[in-house]
Image (cartoon, rainbow, N blue to C red):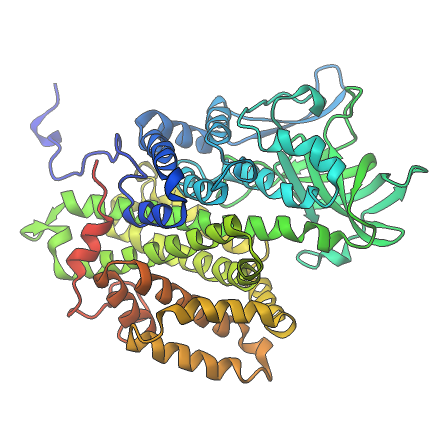
Amino acid sequence: MAGTTHTVTNQPPPLIGYDVYGADLALKEAVARHVAPSLLDEVDGELSALGRSCGSAQVQEWGAQANENPPRLRTHDRHGHRVDEVEFHPAWHRVLGKGVAAGLTAAWARPGGHVRRAAAFLLWTQVDAGSCCPLSMTHAAVPALRTDPDLAAEWEPRLTSMVYDRELRPAHLKAGALFGMGMTEKQGGSDVRAATTTARPFPDGETYELTGHKWFCSAPMSDGFLVLAQAPGGLTCFLVPRVLDDGTRNPFLLQRLKDKLGNRSNASAEVEFEGTWARRVGDEGRGVRTIIEMVAATRLDCALGSAGLMRQAVVQAIHHCTHREAFGGKLVDKPLMRNVLADLALESEAATTLALRLAAAYDNGDEQERAFLRIAVPVAKYWITKRCTPLITEAAECLGGNGYVEESGLPRLVRESPLNSIWEGAGNVQALDVVRALRREPQALNAYLLEIGRTRGADHRLDAAVKSLFTELADLDGIEGRARHLTERLALVLQGSLLVRHAPPEVADAFCASRLGGDGGTAFGTLPTSLDLKAVVDRSRPQA
């Protein structure tokens, strides 16, 4: 029998048994805004079911177990044969399988597919961000494969399948398949044109033999990979199947798994190609052009993933402060804590709103939307992922010492938080990509300006920020050195425009005052006290 000194009081109940989707008003409203009315009931029901699963104790435990038991590399079997396999905890397979079944690789095959998938991706990140890597790679491989109609016809039905098949066997025997990607090399990093992996063509002109290495290979347990290598005609994109049609293993030598800061449930590897069979995707010398749509899709997933992590951190902070008492009252009712929570909630809602707007542009698919994505994707990837880490560390601080303890879940979010800013092109790469679009693709800037122009006259602080942005855009001399500042301003103006158009007045007012009007500080919790901060916090409060 426990002694009286062990009576537990003033601790919040576990945040489980709730609908993660239904509790996220910003996400629900974005889905309703961007999905066709004829589809909304179906999509809303699908996401609510997934949201309840995400909030269940069982699925949350699977996510924790997958991270507590990271993958292991097995290079040889007991007889000495090279197998190059990655072994995962059963919880990983449960989480990944449920993600596939939820349609996280099926956007290209369903109406309204990108918005419904984006919302699901944001939800699933809150269970286990590691499993989102193979889900993202598989989803993003489709547009690259579509440059070759024969390859697309062969592989797309497997990649968009909602069946998870974990066994390594010839792809034509599988109901569903996963894809990874290998671009980065030791000497090149983000400079993929410096790749030294070579591709020697076979007489048929479509298949090649690869020799070389990849310093980062994403999702090395996958059924196939898109890889860049130097062919006689220059840098080229290739499809490398893990298992050949006759059932033999394609040479795919896993050297080691990366020991990463976070993303512990997911495997990332160094891999060697030695006589590895590959099929060319696109023309020789057009490797970057071929794979660029895959890169754009994974960059949007980085923004979505960070938005999901931010949402989960904000939910945990508000839940804790709603139940925790200190200094004579609930923490959530203390003016300074309310200021912090409202500021975090603003950042989270702005991230969600922007990320879902980009997903809707993929579904729309017209010329103007494609031009908008050309500049808006690197802008969003840069800014949302940059804001993720400071937000999550501030949210952990809201829990005090509890937020520094593994059982709270916040340390896992903190470790995960820098990843999306680093992967798929770090901050400088994104900012320089924005500059490249401004210089070479005037239609991209025109599409962006049309988007923010929809709210002209609606908020004086937003109008002033747009005017200042025009001044900065008019001076492109020395733009590379200030590319980060410009990208940040593009992001904030776009977020402000979207919130003024779609969010409740108290949210838009607080965002414009603090992010555009200069009335906020550099740390979270410095909002003007004249704002309706209670309404902002209440809007983001989870209902368990």
